[in-house]
Image (tube, rainbow, N blue to C red; front, side):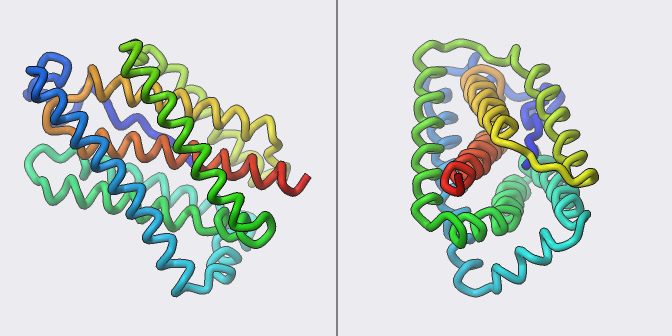
Length: 243
């Protein structure tokens, strides 16, 4: 799983007002739209997974995605490309349809890349592990969101640390695939911490650094952070269940 900075200051909304400088009614409307779109993305993700597991040979798909030494690396590479395209579409300043196409594309890509992990969790750890991971993820996300909104701390200073952390994580993942070593529980815990950092960062951006009209891009960024957290919480629970 990878994460990208979806709130680059050099965005196509540079001429629009910052949400932080907008009237209170506009700020509330932006936040409401952002989190409604986030909720819709999460529900769509769950629905797509249900359809995939009901209609597709997920065991065969999992073997295809994980079968060869470089198969998973190719999948991750394709996911990164699709993520970049989806973000570019979501930040389109002239087409609402393109913005939604970007969000939909990203949700579909996440649903596909989650298939092997969900299959492994269901087969070897039981479906309860998936439900537990989802509840833990939602609880952690809610707690972090409430913390940012109540303290009003600007976590934009985390950007550099998060980028370095993610590039380091990608390097470790690539090395593990190339060399063949296993990513242990420590790496999983560090990635959970990194995902929490992204949630703090993006949530404060929703309050202070996005521009009016960027609610689709903001929801995409938050969804990416939630998906990253869910991925590694689920990995942790699978490891604990197997132990």
